[in-house]
Image 1 (cartoon, rainbow, N blue to C red):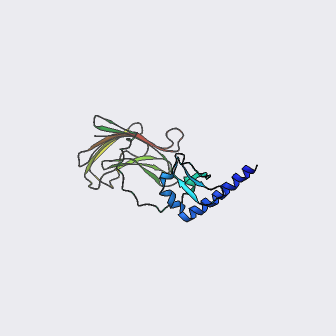
Image 2 (cartoon, helix red, strand yellow):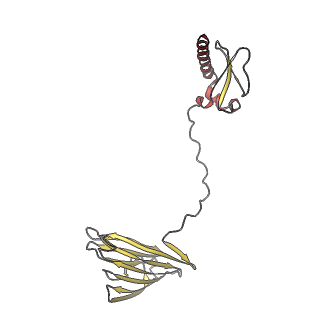
Length: 237
């Protein structure tokens, strides 16, 4: 029992001595610059008299002598506050190219993109979304408050691209048109408002050709969806 009390007193004295030592030596800086004193288990070891007093630090593997007892403590327990943030690093290298559009497939140098869009019937006026955009060609899908579907095409700022259209309105009426001056505000109709199918061919001034086929359906369409439906494909080559 006496030995246990003596041991506790020794550890208490050692702790007080260690605290005093760390305050004097500037423990945080000392630990940060003395990695050689940290043992394989992450502890710092030292020797102190059973009666307290001066604490001596030793490298890993040293044994205390002269009746002095060993003390140890985790090196991380004396870590100081975090320092200021460092300077921003240099910009890293460009990352790898991301995956291709899952709705597009390339075959023999031509890219085929799936066109699919549902547009809810608006409460008033008309709702407009982009069904396709590329090579200067923009195809807009419109759905009126009455649930009527329609398609419009616009071209680049140069206003000198070509567009040819043909299709079927409803179940029997056909239509067709062409323009050599498709521009950014042409609003060329790709089929009368309602339901039908439209086939188009487009060529911009760079010689790129985009052709496609689009079906458009007034509300209700695509099952129980309350709105207009648009679906088809566009080929770029």
